[in-house]
Length: 417
Image (cartoon, rainbow, N blue to C red; front, side, top):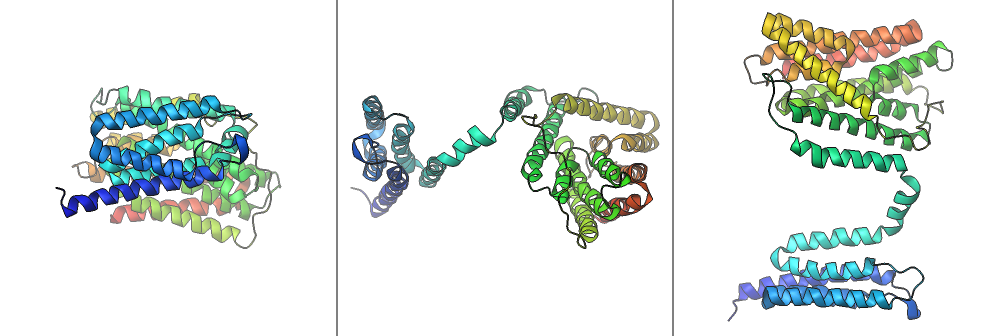
């Protein structure tokens, strides 16, 4: 004889399964149509199917569950065969079988079954939006890019060896992870450019382009100033906003090569990003950013350039090896010299080269932190030089002020944490 607790638990399972079936059935009923060509399943069919799955799992055992699944599948196949509509599909048939499975799942884990029902109903309801996204908005090159990202994340990354080949550097899995992060950043920047190009928003376009290269963004904005197409103040504000991406990418590099540094770097990066954003806003607030000739991605342009990402990953890894070798030969002086040289070329390479040398709690942690601050400072000066060379003194003052401000805030907060 069942206890009151068992009865209550069974009632909750049946109620959850019934609610899941009703949720899916209501969505299907709205698309069922009328007349002889209407779909074969609606509210009642879905509700009864989910309820039957829960009942079979509660009291019938695995044999009855299997028989019920086979029966629902047979009904779905028969309905598909008899479908005489001009555009037959299997969505409703598959959804009905899944409703039965959800009923069974509710008997084992009611929250998971309910969540599965909500996700399934959301996918069913989003049919038109998903079709428009897949057919009209998504481009073939973006589909190919997504497949490459999926292959790297699901196939290459798990198979790459996760052990350094020399000291603390040359870890194959870290290299693959770095390539994946670079490709993701490029992909996000590409999608951002696509979404924002229609609005001709200088501010947001500069921010999105900063994820590709903040230095290149500063240079391109400066060229517009030197050619007289845009005012220095306006372009300098956008250049400062592109530096927000630098702070975000520092966290991305830290998460990739040495995640233990995230706890030490998130506050300085956040403060630096806020400083750059405030400087850019201060320069832009007196004059709204109107339409500008900011190049949108070409038709069917790729989401990322794999060759560029591989070259950057090789550069980052090579600089890590160089800095590690200099540290072995000359100690802390070699570490600092290698980091400063790396910062002239690419700040992310310098950051990766420093962070891979150890964790913040190690004995070398303070020295690594100082080298990181020095690298950011040298890179800020190189950005100021690029701003002056591309856009002249007025642009260099507007853009360089934001660069020096956000770098100084980063270094100051880093020294306090």
